[in-house]
Length: 230
Length: 230
Image (cartoon, rainbow over all chains, first blue to last red; front, side):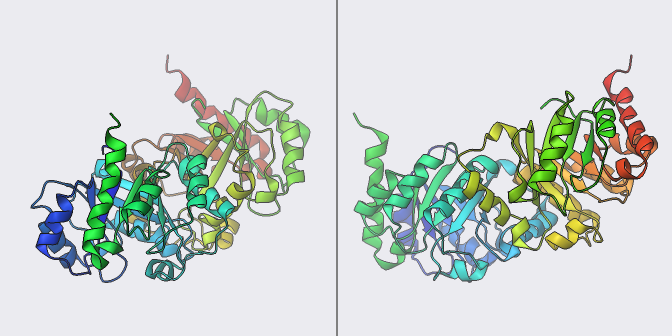
């Protein structure tokens, strides 16, 4: 997977028009991730993939349900929720998936995300029973777990609709050597997208797609900074 | 770490004489692991390391308690108990350790073990609330989790004093590509040591050291098969 600085994340359980999907795909973003916490089914995921696939763009499914794994994506991201206190969301669900599909999986398409759920009010926090009352030291310890201990390819900071304190993200950046840092949460303007992308490898833009589509489209313009300084 | 086919595992909470430690170290085994489930302290671990250190042998601490991490071992193994249902033993304890020692750890000395607890009557199963009623398919799914999904260096099969069914271990061998398989449990004779070492990378000999020391010493002779066939 080549360098990915900007991602649009689409929730198969939320309505979006074919025209909007096409505009997102043609916007200059690096990839479209499909995933959500509630109401994700095989059918709505497949329907959304079919719309996206009419364009030429990297497609990724972020898997949250064993029953909604749809063939045909370029990559599959598997979240491992580090601060979940319900063992289902740490490794049990993965174990069930491996038991069902273990000999069919093409592991070159799969990336495991070390996931930190940081908004205690979010659906994902409630579902996974995540401990979200975390100090900076707690978050850095999780980052080291991903980067050094487990050596996972992706550290995913999930702020679910709220924008993080930039100081925290800046500290994290210096604690991590090899893992790519993905940030998702509250990016609803080009200014926030640019700010956050100076600290992380990849910004994930989700909610604003459904709230203010034109502002969402603007966030891809962070790339103008990154691609070519000439 | 070079090839390790045979390991003696010493429990710092069980009595052993200095002479016995010396004989284990000089036996031809590849390494001594220090670790246990109950009653492991900084003091008894350090005392045992001091005895072992009088010999020249690779020393490994298998960490089970944040308070008993002793500097001076060559390597540190960190168990990640895959089938634990108490989140403490999946990632919470590791998170606390990383919070406390994260910036001091030399990661080149550290190997994470994907641990499967397989004897439901053992102390470790009770402590970690492990799901031990596992089918062959369950165990293979965990093995794939270690080998393919998490890409951990070691898959540790912990049968805690009981000898496994060889058919299970043979099936596992074919499910795993890169991860080294360590086997511990019920190896109390050279015949069992030889049999199991034909399926796994490393046999770990523990309890029999305390039950029949001379039989324990004999188990190192598996190596004669592995080192040189000339």
